[in-house]
Image 1 (cartoon, rainbow over the protein chains, first blue to last red):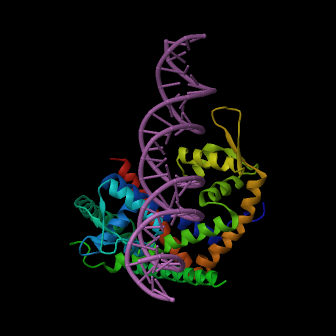
Image 2 (image 1 turned 90 degrees about the vertical axis):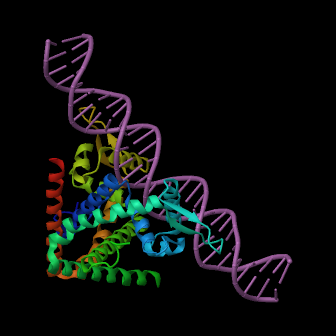
Image 3 (image 1 turned 90 degrees about the horizontal axis):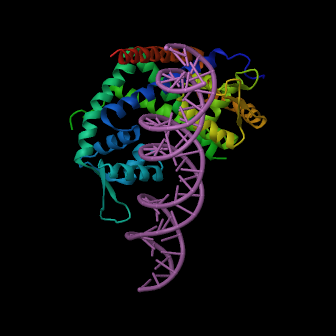
Amino acid sequence: MGWEQELSEADRMWRTYIEMAKHLASHLQQHLQRECDLSAADFEVLVRLTESERREMPVAEVAAATQWEKSRLSHQLTRMAQRGLVERVDSNDRRYPDVRLTDKGYAAINKAVPEHTEMVHALFVDVLGPERLAGFAQACADVLRALDEHRERDCSL
Amino acid sequence: MGWEQELSEADRMWRTYIEMAKHLASHLQQHLQRECDLSAADFEVLVRLTESERREMPVAEVAAATQWEKSRLSHQLTRMAQRGLVERVDSNDRRYPDVRLTDKGYAAINKAVPEHTEMVHALFVDVLGPERLAGFAQACADVLRALDEHRERDCSL
DNA sequence: GTGTTCAGGTTGATGTATCAACCCGGCCAC
DNA sequence: GTGGCCGGGTTGATACATCAACCTGAACAC
């Protein structure tokens, strides 16, 4: 076949990372789903909404915080509104409605966050310990920077 | 609100990791999609199939290699077969059909793998360098082990 | 005012992920 | 044989992601 005769050391490490990322994400996701009846997407939106004092913010602000496409967010909000987790509210400028956390959504996220955080600590933070965690995070930051540079190069073509 | 007054150092590092993982995955995925017209799922299945000499293997073997649920794989194979990347083949035991890589699928994966590998090196392997990469991979392996232990505990309840 | 522009939002279509229900053919008991 | 069991596969329903097309109302030019 040619290219795949023998994986290099580096490629096997890459695969380890991929494995870890996949399993960790799916574990956290399943926990959220089973214990709190929230998808990862629900969780993300709800967390962003709690970052506002008034449990309410413009849709565009949520979009910026999550870095989601507007259409993805719109669909997600529709589903969440149907389940009563959030509601759309008209603001001054009728073009740009707000989203508000309902009581049900508030209760859900307040149950979910501590459990989620605990899980993150048990499976990630505490496993690495403070020093290795710092190194790990630095590595992630460096990869992020490389990604940004790469993206810039792509755009300037 | 209580729990979210101030993110700890560790929590910010966790967020850095999440950010990195999200961006890295989506960048690689978009590249595959644009350059090779393959989704991440397509890519994964095709890679597994090339790991067989005969470009063909039982569905169950693909399922084991990818660790996907049988139904997810079945749907995916249906779509891939429609696009001519793979074909289903009856084996001896008519219960357990095989999947085979078509010529088109073979061509696609042979174009995609080198590009993908190059991207992984540019954005990840080379950014970290050999030493930090090794440390990073070790950390991933440790988290994976913790996940396995945690899963075992869950099952034994 | 009238028309144009435009950022932000919604909608529809398609592909993907997950769960539950079902199907199906070899296997075993009898 | 006949019937039930069982593991692997398929199917359908629903939720989620992404792209393209469209809508909408404030703002600006004139």
